[in-house]
Each structure stands twice: as C-alpha cells, then as structure tokens.
Image (cartoon, rainbow, N blue to C red; front, side):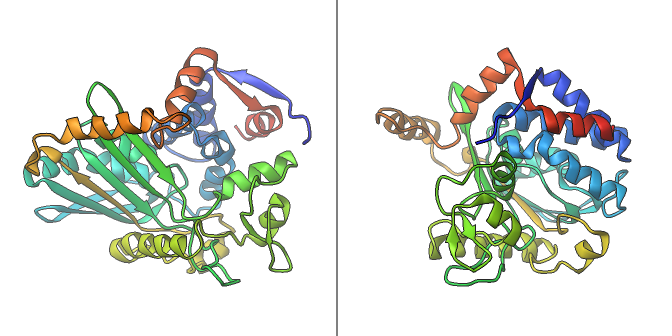
Length: 337
C-alpha cells in the first residue's frame, strides 16, 4: 500500500472546511450548515467515506446545476401517519430536518408514522437520520435507493443501487443502537478509497472487466459493478429497498440515469422513506428492559459487539484527538473553496 500523508484536523475545523466548500459551490447558509454537520459527523463516527471525501460530489452537483443549493422543501400530511416531502431538488437532509418535528409528533400520537421524499438528492450515511429519532425515544428505519451499481446475484449488469438501510433504537442509560449498511458487499466510496490508496479489498466485492468476481478495488472502480451481500439474500434486500424507497416515495429508479448523465452528475434523484415507531404505544412495558437484555447477551460474547457500536469508540477518539485527513484530499478541497 502506498504511504498516505495526513494532517490532523479538529472536528470544528472539519465542519468549517465543509461549510466553506459548500457555500463556495453555491449552497445557501441554512442548507450548508446541515450538510457540513453531516460531513463532520461522518468523519467523527464513520463511515469516513461519507465525510470530506464526499464533498467533491456535493460540489459537482451544485456547480453543474443538477442540485438546488437554495432548496425550500415542502412537506404535506397525506394521512394520520403519513408525511410526504418534495425536496425542491435539494438534499434530503434539508427536507428531513424540516419534517422531523411533525414526524415525531405523529409517531407519538399514533404509535407509528412515515415520511417519504422525492425530488431530492442523497449522498450521506443514513445513520444520522435514524439516530436523531432514537434520541427522541423512537425506533427508526430508513431506506434510500441510489445509482445502479449492484448486479443481482448471478447477473452481470447493475440493476440496484447500493440501496442502504439504517435502523436505530433507544437504549436505557446508553447511546442508542444505530447501524446502517449497504445492500452491497462493500460501499462504493470504500471501493474508491481503497483504489485511491492502492490496496485490494479484504474480500471479493465486485466484477472485473472480464465479468469475474474480484478483490481488485481499481478494477471494480472501473466497472462499477458491485456484488450484493450474501448473494441472493442481498439481492432480495436491495429489491425491498428499491420498492420502499423509489417506488413508495416516487423517486427515480436506480436504473433511471438519463438526467444524471445529462448533467454529468454522480448520483440519481432517489426516493427516501423514513419510518418512526413509538414503542411506548405498542403495549410492551418491558421493551427497554428486553432491549438491554439482548444487548447484554451480545456484549457477554468474547469478540462480539452490538452492530453499530464501533462508532462510539471512533466518536470518542475523534472528539479528543481530532481526525487524520488525507493531505491530498485536503489540498483538493482547499483549492475548491
């Protein structure tokens, strides 16, 4: 692996850099605050592939005119437990922040509520959407589809995006359980980082130019043909996300790339669905105690950990020590601000 030169930045420095780059690319103050926070949180908690390394994609989307840097989303209540958003061609997180108070109120009143959003963009990790709801005592599930990159098990042509999903759950006396994962074996940005750093993946993650399964990150970065996790099982999950996100929200399907190509963009305009559940309304007085019991059983296993808890160690380390940023990336970002 090639040696990588780095510079350590504090979390405030990371956020300020992200804010400066986003505003220089044409994003307004309110929206850039939201995305800059997401970039900082990704560098803090992981996946860092969704942090500063994602900023060039944001920049391209605004400078090309593909995304609206001054988006004013509209939120409409369609039913007792259903909110629908129009993102005004901006990033989903802006619409989500606007909808969140109403979604929380609806979930607490009815026990469950959902928010779908179309005419929007999404490049960040989903965990921050679900974690915000779990901090309010709610269970949360979020799904989004994305640019077609995953070949269905046994196939050769991408049909689904990496189609991530996230789950979060409150825990008594501790940080919420929060995990997110792609439907692919490896997230695209992790492949790009491995290719840039000159090393292979630890396991096969996609197809090479001959259509064979490979660990070569550079080859996969060229073919953009990723494998679903767990073969046919991952294909099933990617299909479910495609339906719950694109079809239910009315966003673009993963294969619908015409507008993306016209702008030279790096993402489609997907659909996003966010579901909030209030466990207090579901009649189980032992809910939090049983969650604690489940977590305790995992923690009691040597070498095991609760999915998503690795982020808590990363968070503590980043808060105390800062984050080592690839110097070449840093220089690229500083040139673009």
